[in-house]
Image (cartoon, rainbow, N blue to C red; front, side):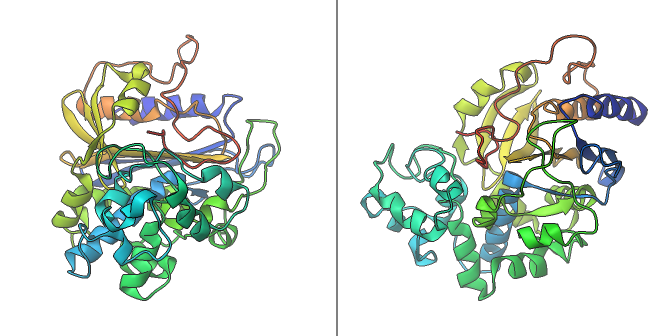
Length: 381
C-alpha cells in the first residue's frame, strides 16, 4: 500500500472548499495500518480533527443492529426466521404482514413497503413507535421478502427485538455485548453520547466558511437505523471485527448470516455508474451491502445525516479495507474508498476522487442520503 500517496490525496480532498473535517482509517491484512484526521472539527475554529474525534455513523449503524440480532440468534435466543411481530410491539404492516415478515426481512429491507416510509414524519418530530404502527395504512408495493426497499422507521423494529430478548435498553445491550468487548471506548448511541465526547466534529450543511448546524435528533430516535457515534479508530476496530478477527465477540456463523446476500439491489447498481469499471453486482445482506468489486466480494455501507457522512468498505477474505467519517453534507469524498480498495487489489490507478484537474463527477447517489432535511440512508433502494 502506498500510504504516502493516499495521505497526499486525502490532504488534497480535505483542502477542498466543500469539506470541513475528515478522518480515515485503513486495515491491511488484519492490522490497523493508517489512522489520520484532516481539517477542522468546526470550520474556522483551528481545532483539528484527530483519530480521536467523534463523528456520527448515520446508516452505517444498521450493521450494528444486524450483528447484534444475529449474535442473539446464534446464542439461541431468537430465530432470524421468527415473525417480527413476536418481538416488536409497534411494527404494523399492510394486511397484517408483520406476522409474515421475519426478523431477517426487517434487517434486509424486504417488508413490501415503499422506501424511506414515514422518514419525513420522523424528521418533523413524530414518535417513531406511532409511525411504525402507521405503516399498516400504506399500500404494499410487493409481497413480503419479494423486493428490497430501504427503510429507517421500520428497520428500527430491530431495537425492539434486541430490547425484548435482552431485557436491556438498546444502547446498554450493544455496549456490553459488542462495543466494550471490541475495545470501542468512544462509541455511543445517543445525542448525549456525542456531546459528552472530549472531541467531536460539529455538523455542517456547507463546507469551509459555513457555520455548524444543530445536531438533529430524528435518527437518534431510531437508534438501530442511525444512532451510533464514534471516532475513526473505533470504526476501524468495528470493521476489523467484521473480518472475523474478533471471533469471541462476532463468530464466523454470525458474520456469515449478515454478509450473505439476501436481496439483489439493481437500483444501487444503476447508481454506481461512475464506478462500474469496478462494481459489477450489488446486493443487500442483513444491515450490510455486498458488492462484486472487480471479481472480489466486498462488504460495505454508507451513511448520511445532516452534516455528517460515513463509509465502510472491506474485503473479508483479504482482511483489508477502509473507513472514513466527515462532518459536512457533501458527497465529494465519494471515491476515497475505491482508491484504497484499488491499492489493496493492485489494480491500475484511477483518479476516483477527481483530484487531478477533471471536474468531479456526480456521486453514485448518494454516499450519504442527500435529501435534506435529514434523511438517513446510504443510497436508497
